[in-house]
Length: 628
Image 1 (cartoon, rainbow, N blue to C red):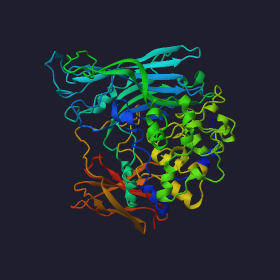
Image 2 (cartoon, rainbow, N blue to C red):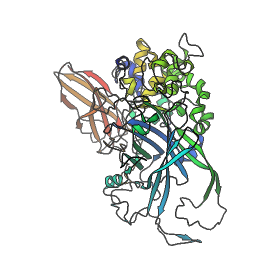
Image 3 (cartoon, rainbow, N blue to C red):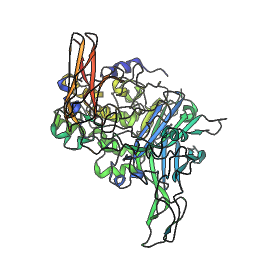
Image 4 (spheres, rainbow, N blue to C red):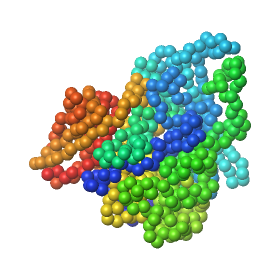
């Protein structure tokens, strides 16, 4: 499916770092409050039930296997790696699900369901007497089947298809799947990568003669990234702040599935029906009962708790499609309601999408005009840019107002990711979920045309066309909320294009192959719990020599590392060298790099408070200079 060149050209005018070294980009250092880390503890209920908390959802064409799509969902964020001995298992009383709508009715046509079972060999408890151990492992673990691994989990992955006649077809895609264990530490798990690889399960869909997909469940480095300090009154108005990844060093539980495109799209025809809607949920049994005081210990092999009995029908308690919606759009008193609602009822949230709170805050603090108040808007077309981004997707029919009753009209004249591009759904329902056009070729960092800003940066293979693990959705969402799609002019355009939180990537490099999420942080290197390091950076040039330094490092990073990084035009990062940090830990030595005069470079420093350890690493704002 060929996409119009016009769309690519229009989006490219917003450069990745267009205002990196201008006064307007001061706002780039201070992202106005948008989330508590995508969907980490974003609602009153999930705050009290972290094992069910659905933090992020991803859907993208697999970069190394483009005939497949990778679906990925994360749960139970903010995992401190060293928090043993129980660590962070999946809840064996919950259902973790990823849903697909391929016919545009905003209801699931396919569900992939993970359910978990504990394999607990730590001993038994019989009427108050114990003969077991408290240890997760009692020796080095080299394989999932080692007797030294005292606690582990397995899972069943089911594919559920909802048929037109109202029946369902259920197939077990994985049984007794291995869940990657928690990364206890180097002494316990000297080769954790091997354990991760053991947990990648082959998937043979019904009708296929052999495996054509893969599944995974286990811990991972949290791929989401942002500066969480925005909740301290927007940094207190200090424009010298730099980006600090508040999720660096934290892990998360991940489920992923790589599956052929033909099994996701309507009628198995990706050419005629290229777009799917994707969201994930967690469900629990409706009734949960606490046991009485002094009740005898329960001895079932699959009991994660000796306290709670669960029964009854399953009900949805967490939901995640597009990032930042329940955080930045839905008010606090409706967040639990949103988490238990289904996409086919999302029209009730239209008014909140049309008048979000973030632009009001940004105007009051940074004086960037509120696009909610653009002249000429009526109640019928107010913030159609956000309606298109979150509820309809983009197509020429959406642009012309021919579908969705005119919602999303007049924003982007391009066939990208609306379900009205499918032959089976000429007039779909508005719904809040990811929309992925599986016929858009994938791009990864280093590829020509790649941008961490996705479609806003001219890269149509990224968010909001699905969502890749490396998409900088905080910066994208800020710019979209501030009206980048309605093409502001002049100083407002520069300020909007510069908006961001100063964090441009996760703290760990993603894997090149499925499941793509980075290995989880080890319990041997826990988060330091220190205040984020702050610093300033200086870049000058003369006679083709760029001189770079960082100073004002506070608190001092004694024994740390300073790394000079170049930001490439395609969003990739290039390491240019290291510099010594002085004995006080407050400044680096100068680093000199020879470059061609006239060349434009975008540079930043990374300060690693602990030498060569990414936990707690802080990046300065990307700064563009012209070599002299």
